[in-house]
Image (cartoon, rainbow, N blue to C red; front, side, top):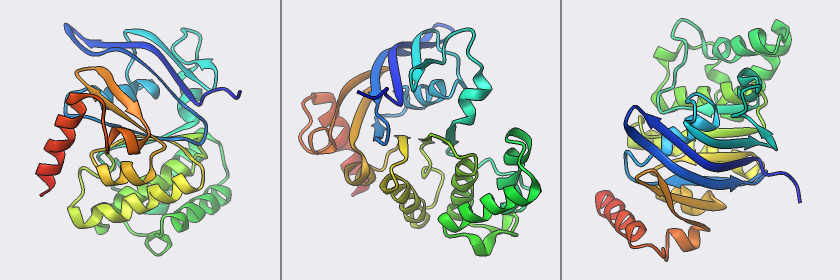
Length: 248
């Protein structure tokens, strides 16, 4: 059996006296799309940030393709190089055009030539449907377009997996679909994806597995047909009912 893309073992994270993650265990297989759902404050984003070592775990282990990235000898920059991350906020450099935003890390981190970085950037802008916006500055792009540029930027580093932290929550409702469409396309291409989302329809249609978190623990996990349609746990049912009522 091949090594899991991500294996999380008894992961804890505290901020002072506040314990946000209380012993998380689960795996993500290569090529698998796992959506993490749950109420605000349940620890979803903190979990994702620990996987990318943007937050330092308090205890426990995280293995990326078999390598313990929580080990003191692990070189964090090498870990991050292979993991693309897309945040709630787009975090584009406002003084750079779309294509320049895609080229910066390629040149500085991967030491690519200007021509090579530009070629990769254009290919990824095409992938997200934004070749015609290559020379526009972020201020001239809609929120949905900026988030698609952010996805293309992450893809330009040729990561082994992608992490999405509420990638659509800062967008106007009419712009959400264009970003989810790009994420669906990545899933169809076989990209390993760990997605924190409140888009239940996306999770139902795209995820191989859904993880429901609450109060810092995994309450329930399984295929979307089970967790989202016929959940075992009363807390999961309560959460989904609230989400459904909110969407009405």
